[in-house]
Length: 301
Ligand code: NAD
View (cartoon, protein in one colour):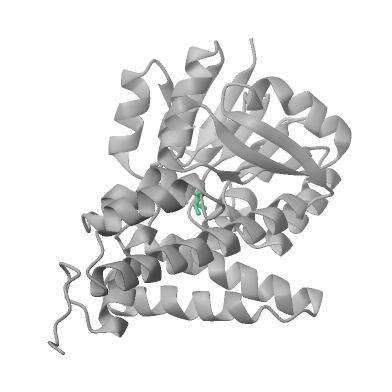
């Protein structure tokens, strides 16, 4: 049986670890929050006291952390994954982070005899719980093949998209499209309501036509009702738009719509909505349009 060290047992990591346990893997997990370790133990996993303890006997280590500083600390810190791993360890970072960090882990990991993949995901908490995430994987072909049994209980669409860092670039493209779609769905709701049209009914029609999307399918009802419990937090999407814009600069391309979406998400954060779901971009659209939180026009014409 393969032993998996799982570091970062938050909204995404916790259900992913549970699915690996259900698939028959031994999971030894670490998180800085004790409550996450209690949840793992309740699901039949083994809590560890440190990164080193979660890594030292593992055949595979997965990290699912907020951003690159945490990943760099866990990977490169004293007693971190690279320090503690046995040779041949398959290290899969599934966090959404900048591609440079993924390439650095792959380079330094290879020097220590590790196999490294960047494998960020899309599909949200529900996708993690249901084991149907989309997983975009960067790294060597042989490492991808070796990781297949580990990805199987986690994802439905698992694609090897290129060398180290490529998974993160695909995830950046994903976040660009998701952010832009939310911004436009929000404006559609503002337009429908301000025009006296039932936004719920309007979006039902949109969802069935060319404008249809997973976002309309999953989020239109909660958006119209102004329910914004996360899900995926504005703070994390703000982080991801930074990765998008950095990647665009590195690739020497202009992404004007992406720049605007990044600013709308930054506005949501600046207005105090950072811990709400990213569908709370609607609150920014409401504000810009002069609509109140119930979506009604504040000014009478
Ligand atoms: P989260 O904040 O719920 O979980 C992160 C976990 O990492 C927390 O439990 C935290 O305590 C732990 N952690 C932080 N620093 C640590 C350290 N040094 N050592 C050990 N544990 C540490 O975040 P999340 O929503 O699970 O997201 C994780 C990653 O997945 C992010 O990069 C995010 O962008 C990405 N992602 C999230 C979603 C989503 O819908 N939530 C969807 C796709 C991708």
